[in-house]
Structure formats: C-alpha cells, structure tokens
Length: 312
Image 1: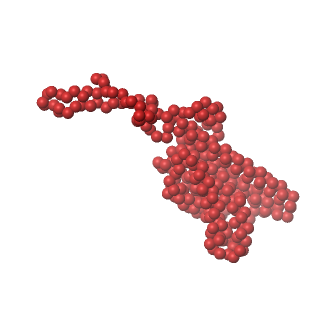
Image 2: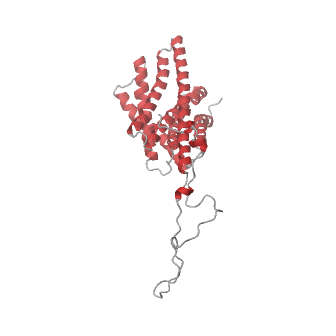
Image 3: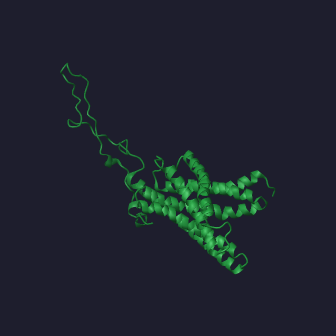
C-alpha cells in the first residue's frame, strides 16, 4: 500500500473513533454534549505534551534509560517513562475538564470524560508512531489498533471509575488516589511486559512466555473494564429509579380530578372595603411532591442483584 498521508491519518484516527463511538453509545441515560467531549479529546492531546514535560526531566535525572537492556531498566522505563507521566497528565486534564462542569452529574460521566481524554492522547501518539515508522506503518497501525489504543482506553475507564466515586462522595481522597495509581500500575505492567521482551529478544522461550502473560493481562483488563462500566451504569439506573431524573410538581396523571379549593386553601371572597383591592386573593394550592415522584419499580428495588454497594 502506498504511503498516502490520508491512509496514514485514517489508520491513526479510526481505532480511537470506534472506541469513542462505543463509549458514547454506552452512555445511554443522559449523554454528554458533543462539545464537551471534543474538548476532552483536545485535553487528551494536550496531555501528551504535559507528559513529555514530566518524563524528559526524569530521564535526564537518570530515572530510566533511553534503551533498556536489563529487566530493571525495562520496568523503570515503563514506570517513570510512561506510567507516571502519562497517567498523571491525563488525570490532571480530567480534573480540569470536569471541575465545576454542570454536565458531570452521573457516575458514568467520569468514565466517558476520562475515556475521551485517553483516546485523544492515544490518537496523537498513534500519529507520531505511524509517521516515525513510515516504512512499516501498516504493521504498526494494525498492532497499535489492536492493543495500544484499547490499552489507553482501558486505563482511562479505570481512572474515570474511581474519579467518579471520589467526586460523588464515595471514599474521598482514597478514591482519587486510586484513580491515579491503579492506571499507573496497569500502564506500567502493560509496557514492562513488552520492554522485557525486547531485553530477551534472542530467547524465544522467554518471549513466548511474556507474550502469553501479556495476552492474559490484556483480557483481564478488558473484563475489569466491562465490570466497572456496568457497575456505574447500574448505580445511575438505581438513582433514576429512586429519585427520578427530573423534579416534578404536577400529578403524573393529568386527567385525574384536581382537589377543589377550600376555605383553608383559598379565599376567593372579594373584599367589600373600598380601600382594599377588590380582586380576589388566591392562595396557592400546594401539592405534596412526594406523592407524585416516580417510584422505584419492583425490578430494581426487589431484585437483590440490582441493589448496589460501594464495592470497589
């Protein structure tokens, strides 16, 4: 295939676009505005530059080598060169995006915004990798579409899951800490398995073992991501069932007979005093809001499998 810049651009952007469509489709109850999601994608691109401003000084100070030749060097490169700077930059951008954001009102929103930032990071990184490997860009694009871009998506979902718990008051700073160090550990493990494989490039047995471990780790991450997304969707569904998605001040059945005003609730007798206003003085008829709020369905409240805890 020719090195058409358009083909390279599409190959770099398409994986992130498909995952973006997936997470947007999963946000089924109250979708976020497209403008906010595009802003999150842009913040993800900015996080690339922020992560470089962290990783390059760490490399200069000797925290990790340019090219790891030992197991320790491979793990250090994964931790100080990728895990800490990249996930730290994404978390900062997530906080900037959702801080005082009026649209951030559901648990699942944290996952959506974090995933959008992660996909923005992955897209920009993808373009850089494909351009720098122009002779083998098809192979690089295929491999990164299968693993690297979904990997950034997985790290972001875990980050957004715990960020939402903290934001909505479930664990406070402990959950904020998990929103940082768990993606860092996942990212470090992901990269370390690949970097250690390069150290043992001449040992096919070790490479095969590391490849098996990598596949197992990748599948386990996907299963955890599915579970975390389902848990936050269930939390939001239970909230809607218990409290309703909107405040209502009128009866659910508009055809139902309305209470007639009584002497206690409304005075419609005109005053005979000419010094006073002769128009009737109406006191408002009040309704008990609780009588007309949507009530949880039996399917949600009576089914033990849908009653949620703050399980992590």
